[in-house]
Length: 86
Image (cartoon, rainbow, N blue to C red):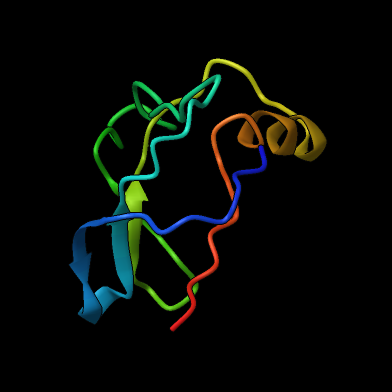
């Protein structure tokens, strides 16, 4: 999806975590979804850690396994490149 250059309002920000929520107003065809269930019985709600040991998500079960190319194709339906200029 390509969005013309525009100035968008900041809804919320967290400088400590380098995150910002923007109100873009784009009409995406699909939205990201969260998985339901757990990877292994008893792990529901367990932390998902990055290589530094930081929590980056919560463990949930998938219903199907996609190839990396299929994952990228799905993600293109609800993601856009955002460049910040000062």
